[in-house]
Length: 86
Image 1 (cartoon, rainbow, N blue to C red):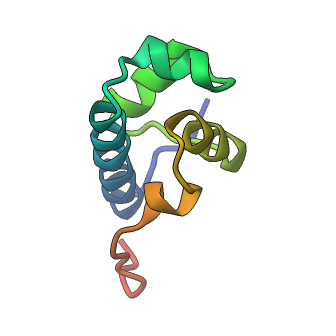
Image 2 (tube, one colour; image 1 turned 45 degrees about the vertical axis):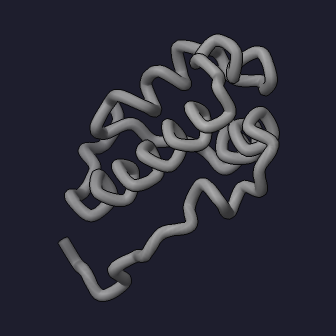
Image 3 (tube, rainbow, N blue to C red; image 1 turned 60 degrees about the vertical axis):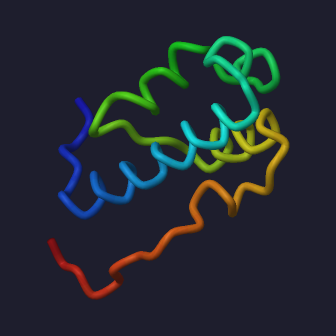
């Protein structure tokens, strides 16, 4: 059973999720089309875009970026609150 995510991590993943959806829609891709461009099943993309406590690995981040034709850092280019202990 996976550990429950801390509120700060849920917030960080929300920001990631927003960027993932934004880039995918800007490219005119559905989840299935994106999955065909990278080595990730479309159901995993769906979970990442919709489930509040979803998480991903670094290799998944790289594959998503490859499929979107962007640098991986673009998917995590947002402000972090490094002082938060929540």
